[in-house]
Length: 227
Image (cartoon, rainbow, N blue to C red):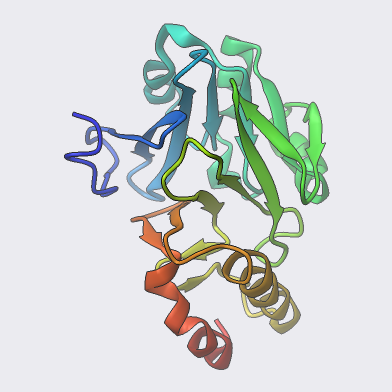
């Protein structure tokens, strides 16, 4: 079933969940029992082209998810090791274009041995067949962290994949770096909450989904607590 049973609660070793978003169909899976990373496969309903967001771990799980449809693109949301452990195997298996935020690209290549084909900046786009994701740069968790926005006439609500920059309950970890936290909370406040409606669904790099409407009342509390 699509949509009727989707609640976004997935666990490593458990089944994936699938949701129709209007012009694309999203499948969410969790990998690695220790880190419980989310990976998201987006499939264009018109062309069948597929894009993977974060080849985090368990390449066999992700290859099964991709199936025979192949991948046009693999997006890595940021440079942290737990989000690209399966990147090399998936890249070699599919020949997909590898894209990531420009400030994180060199680190991703150093850690994985995989060249980043396209370095993304704020406002750039990533095609999912006939549909388009818009890149939102959110510095702070890492210098080159990005989110990806799907918002066009085919979608009832905007949909946003946030990596580790925004979760239900707060922004991502900035590891005690006050300047990085201020950068991240400012970017999330202005570029996400300041631009997108409450009806926006967002899908983080770990854990459950939420909406901007659920989280918006707490943003100033996050800012005051400093994490």
